[in-house]
Length: 86
Length: 221
Image 1 (cartoon, one colour):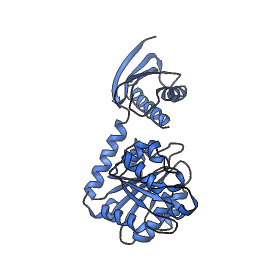
Image 2 (image 1 turned 90 degrees about the vertical axis):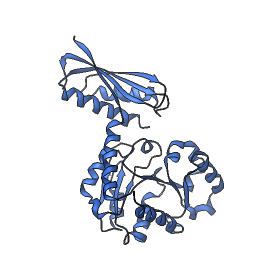
Image 3 (image 1 turned 30 degrees about the vertical axis):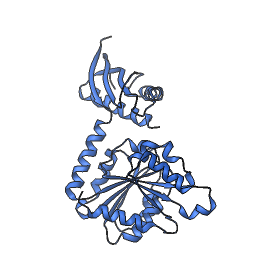
Image 4 (image 1 turned 180 degrees about the horizontal axis):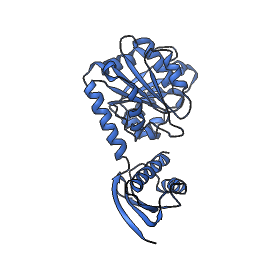
């Protein structure tokens, strides 16, 4: 149920980094989701893609890797420096 | 297209947990315990808090933060039972309170003039278990109208709670609810939880809940 809250937090983390470092447009968000993190990866992916379709993003993808344990981590941001982040 | 990868490797909950740690440090410095009160929607958190304020609100300076998806109704109801400011957080759709919202709410609360902080979370038995708000104890209100199976269906939340208030006991004659089975189910997922059966409506048993709260406020945290 809190996949949407987690997705919002991931977007906040991504936006904070894009703005602070004046990076280009987000292409992919990489996440690691533990099997015991209490999240349904397909649902999280669905929430993320809905949010990443909205400004300031422009249709970035979410790449979720399932890992053992209860970790939930934003692992990487793939950005395109030729397309400005708005 | 010039695409590159920025390494992050940060826990998604890190920011929330960091703010929760600062809240915890601030209130421990001021000697104020905080109860994170959770339940499913409609279990009776607000009525229990109204009764609590009527019973011990004069002895204990209780600061309240209420979380609701929409409306300030709970805060308005509680304000009628206390002279203290009741801080309302409207989450606008989010299913839980997070540490950032509590941090903002605390800006208007003088912890030096507070004996006990009660955070009435959004009615939900899933998400508030994941979000640390800097509490020192979690208490749950479970109504007997919800049935005996709730602890087995929401084990993470029941496991995370120090106290389970079993509310709406006045309805027992009208229901098929088996209190012993409910207690056994709570103990199966959390053998350490203290159970307090009561009726917020009639007031029966509320004194035991208040005594637990008073004990929290007088034990150094």
